[in-house]
Image (cartoon, rainbow over all chains, first blue to last red; front, side, top):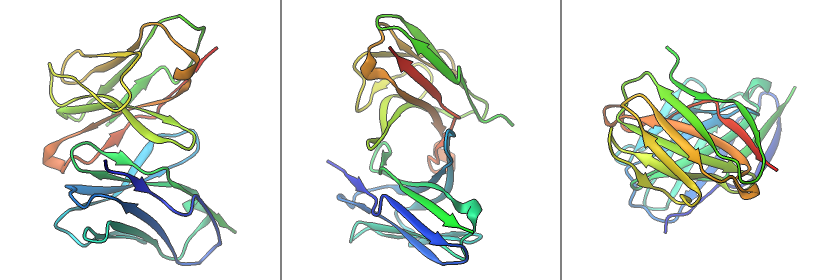
Length: 109
Length: 113
């Protein structure tokens, strides 16, 4: 059974720091992986989608990488800002998406 | 472009009451989903519909029913609400042409007393 883990559960960093969020999954047979952002009381917004044949995707200050063989993905946020404070979730799709429990990020001004 | 619209945003029920959560998408997506989000549990799939006229159970279907009314609308019904169904419910949609990228509604916060 596919399991998705995100560690740490919470993270606080000073503004301007570059940071890495981690996502690990137990079964490498996936079609794609998505990273989402969730603000308190809101729905999920897709940040990046990486297909199984890709190694990374970039959007602005965000870069997501995928290593299927080791069952890992990372979300790199460059020059963090207070507006980046949110919960970040990853989800893998073997057939239907399976979600991790997220990392709650707080960027301190 | 509204995307995925869910109603209501908040609801309080008494144990045993019934209700229907509504979801509509305007992106012409074939696939639609219902998830619930509980603290420490992540999002869990309740039901999904791969296309109009089809529905399938997800990870936690007990106590729920769904209807794919047409391509746009996918409703979730609680026939006899229980306190264990207190949760935040999200509807989502996706399309193969966009590599099954998930688009979410803003959620329904449901409390069952």
